[in-house]
Length: 499
Image (cartoon, rainbow, N blue to C red; front, side):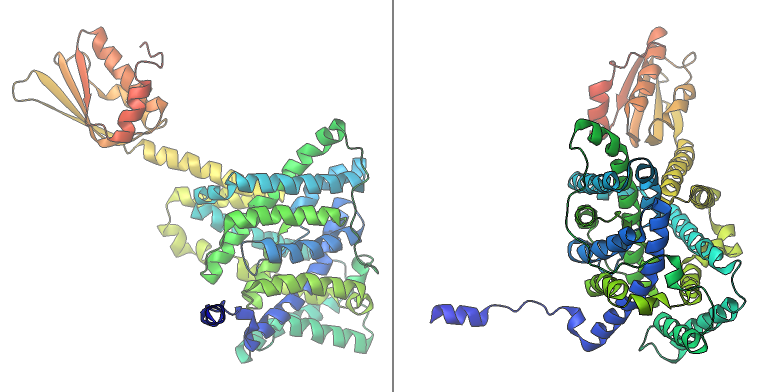
């Protein structure tokens, strides 16, 4: 009887939010829109990587389904991406698909290892100005990627794209019951099929698969030579994929005002790449463009939309390939243009904002954007932005150390007071702020308002005491806080300062 009562009194698990009819409808429709947008992207990235379009399409399916289960950021879309395609293209060209797949599997394993080592915690060191530059560069890249679809095409493409844009701008003002991008895609497809219009379609981008992906191992020699060959590419896949995924996750956190587990997202990306490799896919990571379609344009918020994006993608290209093939590219181009415009942080480039923003912050943002556009690699742009931010910060903080002094009432001791943070940049000027020749024989350096961060600072303090000692004067360093006292006590006199 007691066991029955315990079962009755056991608290129920919270009901998943997507079981709500309204949320369920939003998630399903969002997944469908994303799946349609993924098809031409996956085909394009396959061509960029130098592999069959099926490889990219299967990768998008397995990445989306796996990350929906393992990932740490609900509603984020992972699939085959251009960044990963650029990394693996030389390997595919020189050694073939099997070596590419082996590199993807190893890259996934490296991502899991990096997750265990806590690489996700490094996200806290990415400044806001780098994030803004990252978002703006992404928006520009998304827009630029659509330009080839609008050059050298039949004139009918332009009015079709204009109609799609009008639908996506105007429909949300009337109703949000159905995602505007889906309506635009359906309307343009019906119009072009009914009128037999000759315009570029999804089918023109490449052959769609007619079978399901199969599980298997890459046919490569399992030797140290193979490992040495694929390891650099695997490391590139891991680092580029994690950086783009974690940046995208942080962006979605800000948009949805909800937290996510970056560590879980890190190892989830690794698991997704391993699964993708075993199913013959080219690997991938988070896709900001499709994620913005899912989160901003369609209003999705749960894992269901990510899962269904993968499922719908497979159904569309395998079972409904003939239908998908007739979708006009003008519709998908218009969707991505809207995504680009809505993704760009227009406030960040407003004249009023630029006037108020410190020059250093603007330089960091511009550096991130320019580097990303020059390399077509978001990861390289982020690294350049972070390095620039470090230099700007070091220069700014280096000038915040102040040294003041007074004589004691008896006139026998000079008391110096140091204010600020002492590290490699700011401590360089410390040595020159003392009057070695004219000070009395007793000198006190008060560190109450200072903090010692590194060996460079300890070396600077050693240099000060050494110069006074050369003149027969004594120096006492007082009021170090505990962390500063620990590092000073450990390193003082042991750094070889002799000047």
